[in-house]
Image (cartoon, rainbow, N blue to C red; front, side, top):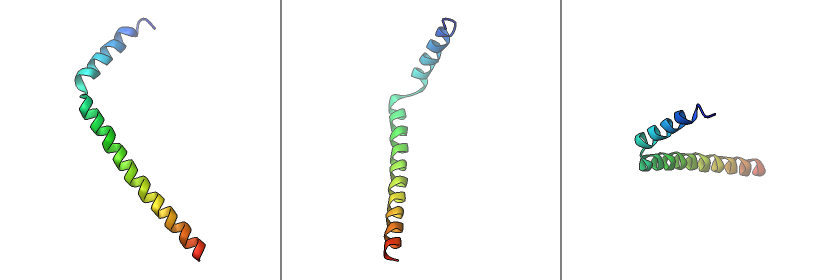
Length: 56
């Protein structure tokens, strides 16, 4: 495990310089927003399907 420690440290340093925290947070919120939109759409479709089956 001690042989990999410098490699992990180098990767961590590289990531801190290449990823901006604001950019990362923005990407996470964009993904979350799209997931919420798709989830709400699917729930509305499911509720509509259940209501149609109960009436029919």
